[in-house]
Structures are given as structure tokens and as C-alpha cells.
Length: 165
Image 1 (cartoon, rainbow, N blue to C red):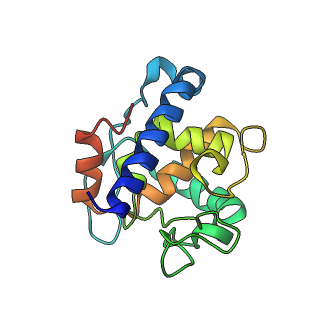
Image 2 (image 1 turned 60 degrees about the horizontal axis):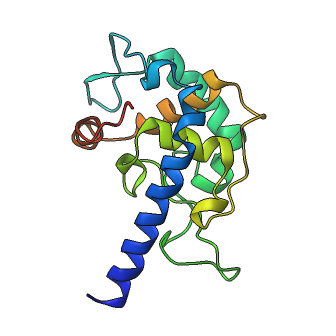
Image 3 (image 1 turned 45 degrees about the vertical axis):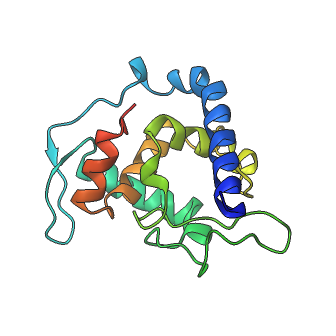
């Protein structure tokens, strides 16, 4: 196994362990550990599909994301660095794109909320904690906003992987 694959394996294992430790705390943010699915069709650039969020959540999320996230993740969650996998000079990782082109769709909502609540330091990043900065509905709205950029294929894969947990 090459050095990069070992490093990725160790990093992934560490993320899973951290996520497991914080799962109990996140259950308080998501009733019954699940997002309540709204019967809403979210439409983005001609894409359609039933998703867990509403158009109102996307609108709120756009404002929340613009004020709190866009500086590092890009206004349309596209990221602001060429290679989000390459460490910065300080040894940390830059903020990844959240628009479906990186790895955010590999993580369930509970883990996305963990990162929002506790910041990126446990994962090698510099993202600050928003636990006391944003209300729960704003956190979910920011997730709705960036997930609205995901293709239907990426969103469906995220759901199959247990994304709404």
C-alpha cells in the first residue's frame, strides 16, 4: 500500500473515531437522529428531486452561508483554493468545496453538523466553531444551501449512504 493510501486510511479512521465520539452530542440537534423530510421539490438549474429541505431553507441558508461560510468555502460553496487536499503552510487543510465536488457528500448530516458546531480543528482544518454563533435552524439551512448545488446523482448517493442520519 502506498504512503498516500496509508495516510488517507489513517485520516479516514481518525475522522470516523472522532465522529463516533461526538454522535451523542449531535443527536440533540437532530430529533430522533434524523432530519425530518419535507415533501418539497427543490429545483436548481433544471435539476429536480425530492430533498429533505425547502426553498425557504435554501433562501435562509444563502444568507447564513454568505455571512459565515463563503469567505473560506466560496460564495457558491465551490471552494477558494485550487487543491483543497494540499496542506497550507501552517500544516492545516484549506476549506474544501461543499458543492458536491469534494467529500462533503460522503458524510451524514449529523457529521456535517458536528463540523459546524465544533469547527475543523479535529479534522486538520482551521474552521471555527459555530455552536453558539448560529441557531440550529441556521445550521441546517446552511447545509440545505450547499446541498442545493449537488447534482441529483450525488444527492441520491448521499442518501443511500445514510446521509439524513
